[in-house]
Length: 134
Ligand SMILES: [Zn+2]
Image (cartoon, rainbow, N blue to C red; front, side, top):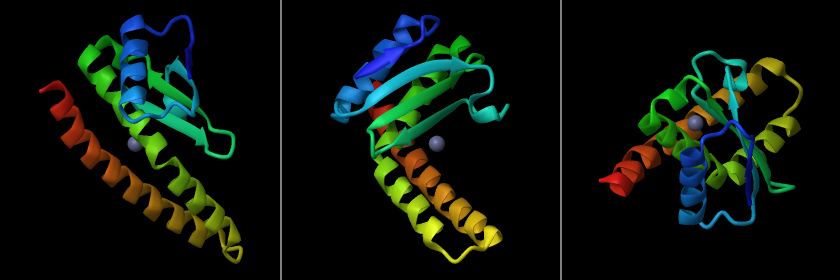
């Protein structure tokens, strides 16, 4: 189920619902919000924070990005794809916690895996999104 803040444009909510239905992600409880700097990073257009143990997620989209409808819809699509890999990413975080405490190593493994997930999602995004709108 999706809920959104009042300032989220209807067309963006509609797109988000469409993508969630496309991947049958009905079991998730999702909040869609606009943020000036998603993830406190000025260069981030969107972020998806999820917890597979409670099946809740928060998708933040940059206020600057919604000025460009096409880009905003694609950003939401990208963040929805993150939900598909959320259980994998969650397991990875748990595995890293089990590592013998070595902050540097944890950060490094975390970054490797995050980069890998990002590459897979970019590939899915680039192929599926153009197919969807072609
Ligand atoms: Zn991403």
